[in-house]
Image 1 (cartoon, rainbow, N blue to C red):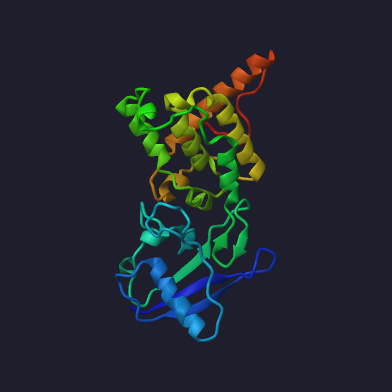
Image 2 (cartoon, rainbow, N blue to C red):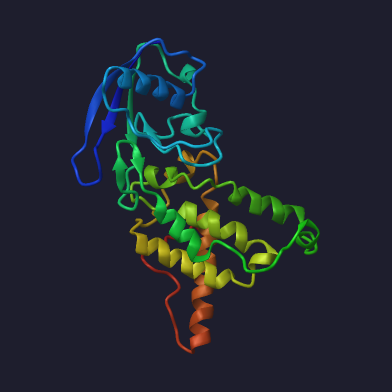
Length: 266
């Protein structure tokens, strides 16, 4: 198949970017979207040009690196897939494809289609862990966990931190990511000891990174390649309200449980 690519090119985060047009000829329909970009890049190099920079790693839909906005939609219009899982058979011969980076203030562009998503790492470092010693498999299984709880935690833990939720949101909110990363620990018994501290720390770090407010439009869950439910945002709001109240009680004062970044789904 033959395609026309409209690709965002930008030397670095301090220079202006622009769209450049590239032909993508004789592309196999069995090729993945990233393999198609590999083919185009090889031809650019052979012609003496500068290849297009884009993120990738596992190419199996589990690392979250392939952060491409394809025809205006993070990871493309196909539901439940990452850019690396998208195949060219989803497109038509002769089609024009627009390829841009994930756009958000908290995801500054490094080069071309590559953005800096280390803000997600800092949010997870703020509280996305447990200090309970689980040890080997026998020790980990010493605390009984019901199947419903385990399944619920796993649904949130499938978040790969790709950032599609942020790129899809008109406010560049990270509430779906934060709610999933905090939620899968908050529902487990091993996560209860630090639940309040974790919730407050991760939300505070999210605000510090400059992500926008959640206004419950649900673009985040629609764009999520793992189809994580926006109901986790409601849970995060409830956990944040409870953690704020507990913190205020511990200090002997009062604190408004809701701040400007929150809109409850309750």
